[in-house]
Image 1 (cartoon, rainbow, N blue to C red):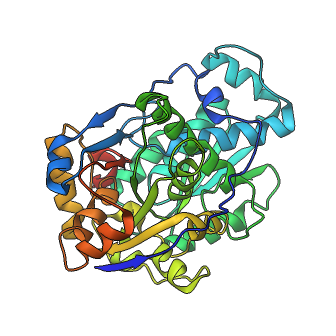
Image 2 (image 1 turned 60 degrees about the vertical axis):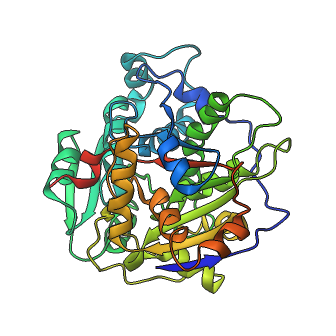
Length: 373
């Protein structure tokens, strides 16, 4: 295990926009708020007042939070071409009819599982084509799930980053729209839209914990692949000026610690990410360049952990009724590792953790999505 402690920037900016992705998501016929679960057994082990877990193991009929970002990014990109869709609640027919002038368009994405499946599902909503690029380590079960959404699947030899490059190259063709959750340039707009879509989970959370000005989440534990969800967490942690900002803790697999490496270096720095890990959905070698500034300014602690901690966190969450896999449990796993080892007192002091503290974790995908063979 490696631990990186950071001071956060006092002037971390949150992008101001009139758009609220949650307003779009609420209009969709499959929308439902995901549960916020109280986990007193985990709180007791950490010695804190409460532990809350946002259960993202099912969204819009898919086993992951990823469709929040994919659906918002696709809609925002189509809206630029077509104008906004009509007012009110939407049906499947409304979505398909609105997008019909772009019927020749194909959505393109790279994935190691859930993002690609989400893009494929959204393409089906709008009646568009879809082509998904995956690295050759992706399990047959995850590949089959993407194809079952109606997407064309292209398997790329090599690491996750090779599939990202392949999708980027393919997207320059006419009528191809790249819906990437990772950015090769800080000016890329779509990955930023994907991250913005993830904010719906945090906006729901704000309502679920209540609007009391005296309530605060002290620590948010979140996992990272390319860093989009973690960037959304840092934005939410600073978004309410009536509460003390939460400390954001990011966890990754030891063999694919691209965020850890970038934060330690102070700049995006690729890693090999070629070691097999139970946290396969986080096996990414390069941090997203649109996510990195928020991570660099807003992350208090970053952890690179081995698989044993992720598997232990899966068991802990199962006791609280949450069925997730090693990738989905990695945010919890990192703090389990940090607070039970030689760095525990230092980490507690840095994060300001005590018996009155509240911790929040995100269970990002179901056990089926994480471990499909």
